[in-house]
Image 1 (tube, each protein chain N blue to C red):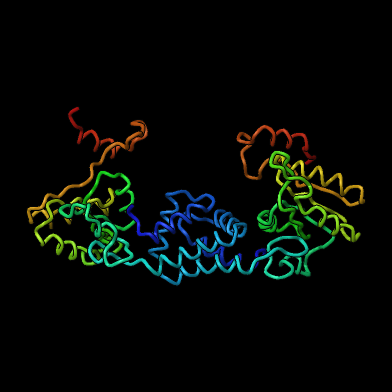
Image 2: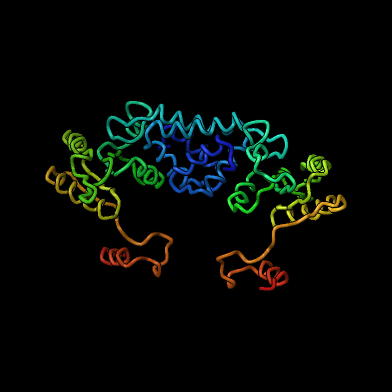
Length: 198
Length: 198
């Protein structure tokens, strides 16, 4: 035992974080020890604050500080298009593309018979309720391009299409800026199958 | 702007941490948002606590919660050997080897004319004072094996040797378990120069 108890406790807590192993935990802990007190306390308070102030948006289930999230509250968003994602963390990457101006719906997971996650465990009833208003013209199924995400998208497409709403899914294909040589065969195969006229 | 203000604030604070870029900050922030409140608050409190309770050991300048650090307080440590390191963060890796049972002295940096760090900026006077008691028989100069560390070790060796105290430095050589093929030439060169009879 070489670390003071409070340092050891900090190391233990830091190691729980995703992507933080014993070495990064130590690097971060010593950075905190070395930082001025105000900087360290800003981090400490930001963590407590987020747990205190953040809840789920009552409409789309994104993280929000009020009844509705920033996106649902915005007058600039097109409410006729709903992008369905698995988790709140999937929203920032889509927002950063700056090509989507609709709203979202967070399912809270993806269908997975292996893990015992069925339709009732996702916010599908809430989605169907939003669609029943008749104002929505397109649903973009942006669940992950893996087995669970594809299954969920297929399931939702079957539910939504009969309502006469356009159902889409982001294209699979080669990453922009990537090398064809390093693309996996499934991605490359799908990119060739869905090739477009230039 | 897609994140709630408190989430954005947390992201900003997380990105300051060493080795944490925008993507890891986001991964950690969403982990915190998803974690139960008690877990998140334990991390928040551990950060605040460490800043509140940790100070420098009055003898060796390691981090400590009391007047003396755990190592200086221990009756099991051999006070006749002092291992000199640059920073408190250099102590845990040495402790983990379990081959050293002496005490430490933290310099608080290394000599660096480039950055304007001279002998007066390090805790050298405090080290010489500890050596003046006459009880210390060996000083291990465990500053980093880089230019600043080597300079600091050479400077301290010149100061300490005249006192009749044994001055040593951890061996340079090939990392155990490493491949000879991937060793850099300086390390390999030094390992060959200091080769030993088997």
